[in-house]
Amino acid sequence: MANGPRSPHDRTLRRGLLMWALGSSVYLVAIFHRTSLGVASGLAGRRFRIGPAELSMFTVQQLVAAAALQLPAGVLVDRFGPRKTLTVALLVMAVGQAAFASTHSFPLGLAARTLLGLGDAATFVGVLRLTTSWCPERRIALLVQLTSVLGMAGNLISTVPLRMTLERLGWTPAFLGAALLTTAMAGVVVGVVRDRPHVAARTPNRPAPPSASRDRTEPPRDEPPASARRTPTWLREMRADISAVRRVRGTRLGFWMCFTGAFSFMAFSLLWGFPFLTRGQGLSAAAAGRLLMLLVVVNMTIGPVFGQIAATRPGSRVRVNVTTSAIVAALWACVLVWPGPAPLPLLILLVTALGMCGPSSMLGADVARTSNPGDRAATAAAMANTGGHAGTLAAVALVGAALNVAEALGFTDRTTYTVAFAVQWTLFPIGVRILLRHTGKLRTSDGQETQPTRA
Image (cartoon, rainbow, N blue to C red; front, side, top):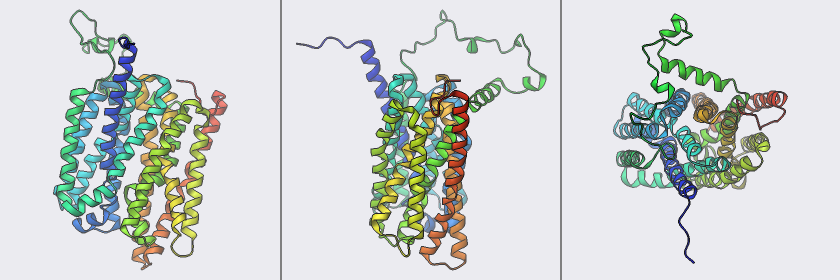
């Protein structure tokens, strides 16, 4: 018996999944650019003739740029739509990676990493807004975690495949090729992605929304103060959106969940994991590369599990986040106090736990999203995501500074990396303490721990 024609709902769902898949591919590209320095840190040090502190500045500068633009990017996505913002983000990252591929200058390299961070800032929030516009609410939490899974494929590409490409082709061809592929992806987004289902073009007979049809030369009935009138309208609206999202307790809770869940995993995968495993623990480059691949595989495997938890048991999101962070902190303590290089099974346990941190931090973005109205979803997720960037920035900078001091004091490689990673461990109690405080406030106000009502 032949199947009947598909219903409009089925067609919309299929097209929505296509939009999500394309958006997630953009996130994959962004994660590749974000983590591409991990296995290239040694080459970068020789190419730019810099030490660990200067090398960490590449990642710090990229994270500062991403964190600084995170909130404005969320507001821009909510206001102008994900198609335009994702296209611009890809083009900015392509320019940044092409510049990084071509220069030997440390200042120009910093400028190139800044461009990569600026483009990266808009990718996750753009994909999240695209998903919320096209897909049913019951699927969003799982799809967001699957976005993280696909993003981690970019991290996977930036481990052994990128290392082999760098060894065979060299620095400039490898990174310039990545820039060209990013430009091609921007063309795909322009040609295929649409912001929402069934967007009809506005015609003269179709009234424009009130915000678009307002005569900007006429003052509103309740005229704002003169100081406010001197501020551009779009900037006042952006400030109002950010202020409204920040006042929601669930947003602040999501911020600290992202902070606590992300910093150790990101510092390890972005920059310091490979040298920690090779110089600090004495592993070969091949063995360290396999452990970094395990990190990504665990992240991709656990993501859907945590997504299902977020969709079916949202009250468990904070508990999962805190438990994961506690396990990682305990394993770091075991590795760092172990007399001599840690045994391989213990390192495997640590890397496995770190791989769970990415999906764990995504739960914070989900808490922020579900605490705010749908038209502010990108802004809320961006504010929560800023916590992850802030924690990562602190961890990367602390480890880099500690490495410089330890090397200056003449410590052995193992002692140097033990001291450096012990410094980043101090961020765990800070993040968990503030997170639990916000959880208590949310429970007192709303009567539920992690199912806050929308603002």
